[in-house]
Image 1 (spheres, rainbow over the protein chains, first blue to last red):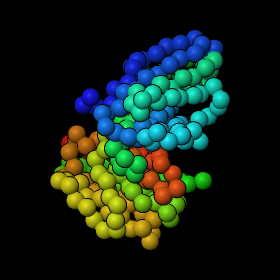
Image 2: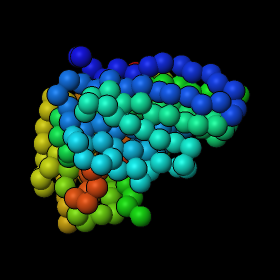
Image 3: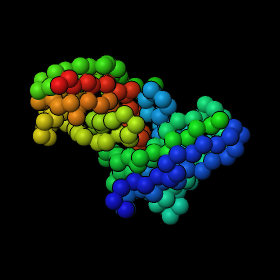
Length: 113
Length: 111
């Protein structure tokens, strides 16, 4: 596609429920990243995929968070047993190669009530 | 802990002036440097990248890199009200695949 596509754009969920966030990167981009941004805060790195290599999960805040990337393209970020502190905008980005600048998607605003 | 530091602002400049935004980073192994612009409620947009010491110009924007001082800056000439946004500095170190972002400087250009 022309840009990075994320869905849903907004998600309201009850505390304790599981959520799945989807990211469709720019076609041909080998690197895909997930970040989150809380209100008034900076960008917090979550996880990074490069080609077929094992993902860098070093930024995941707890074992309730997981992500996968199927076929080197679409990625899903799953948050289990959501907590109120998980409320944030979750941003996906892709880049042609490692070390290149990113193109961000428009984000998923997650609200846990 | 690798860090990227920016003055949070707000930085207020009059229309037509030069806005100067600064960023320092802690990892001497850093190789790639980026500036992103983020409008309120929107996602970050890449505006400049720089990889070697010196200046890089693109239209009204100039990025400056000094690896010895671990310092990156962004100059915006002839600032316009539409430049009002938060500017994020991002650094890619040689040992990590992901960018480390500063918390951003909020710029306000007054008509």
